[in-house]
Image (cartoon, rainbow, N blue to C red; front, side):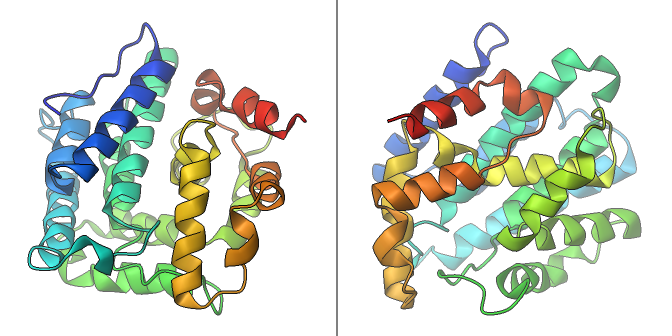
Length: 270
């Protein structure tokens, strides 16, 4: 991709087109996470930022993206989990970019480059070296992902380092419902709880769509089977997918503007 096909005229279709292009790219010649992250940063005009924190956050995100790609430079793709792989990270980055565009357009006062850069940084790092499978105890995989990028995170300003750590830990599926409860009945603003919800929404958004979701459920089943997790036999069935869709939460005005709730309800309707 030379640029993200996102347009204010039709955010949902632009997002879906970007995800289609990602999958063509994944099957043919992968551009790499650094390139995809750059497209997201350019789309949000984050690369023009001149303040110290935003610049450092952008650099951190790029270093993590390069580090992830380097892990697979000499390996074949099957070594990656079937679901929690670079394609998933790219999906999360592009969904998050779209959510941020909508928020910036509809809540002009919230066009905050530093928060946007921090969220993209959290997104690219949130599944760092994900082993596949599920947590055996709270925050197991998420904490390992955060610890894995510590050698890169040393340059981050303390406040953003703490926030990104919290947001990554907050992607533990057992935390998500409470995360949404924290912002219930609160208008959007740039505070930790809302940033957390945006990352949570981006993490599952594509899996909740009717176009890409069923295939991603199949990928998750393959990943869980390789990990020896008994849930693999149900997750991609009609009942298992319904379980996921009923549990999915979308609270932000941006996610609602993309019509994801209607898609979820349509899939749950017999």
